[in-house]
Length: 339
Image (cartoon, rainbow, N blue to C red; front, top):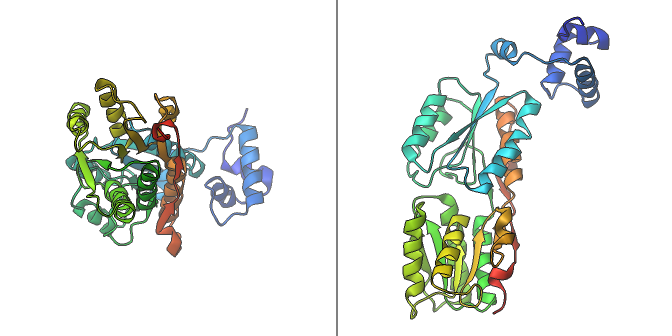
């Protein structure tokens, strides 16, 4: 069989080579019907574009980077799936970097990627990130960057995709109070995480509305399970001050709570009701099943990638695309059931 190239596709479709090329790159300049004709013939003839040659012609790497704090959390895996649903349609590869909640590692990765290795990047900040000069340097260099979930709202002209954390923090706390909890504790990871701050704001607002005489109980935790268990153990052993409701900012802290309750022979939800942000499908299999605030992680990834490619293609972002807030949902399960 003869080699299939752009010229052959163009000849058989009676189109210009440039039109075929732009259609395969999903250019906005080419109509949907033409794109479908080109893709159908390319698939029929087994045409595979040469991404390296294309990159050289366009002076692009045809690669984007995704930087996340961890992948143990099912949320980030789902975000990456959403990004991967968009990138191949643009002819791009995805590089994934882990910061392991380390600001220095995050800064070093961004420095590495400023050498033209990628055409743009998506980033969720580590818990330990408290200064943002590395982001500002990227922005000033004109390299497209999109923040998602854990963001910095003080840097101008950097799009962000987040969820309604403060609203859902409020609703989670309200849910516990309406289920009869008189003392709700908020467990959150140490550091400067924007999600922990937003969710904590919602928690505090709910306490202020429903239990104005009750002092909010903020419990700072860490990324270390053993340390978290020690903190939660101390909290739950204090019978006089023991909370009867736990709102966990992240699922790791809900898991730690379950472990300590099992150790101390405390029954969920009879002795303690628990709710947590969690995208873990297995939350429904916990004993008892965990009430959860579920974020639209896949949609966050898809929206982040869509915005990033608009920037790479130098398209103008609409005002409502510079900060996108997607709704989460509260799923009530047995961990907050009436005692």
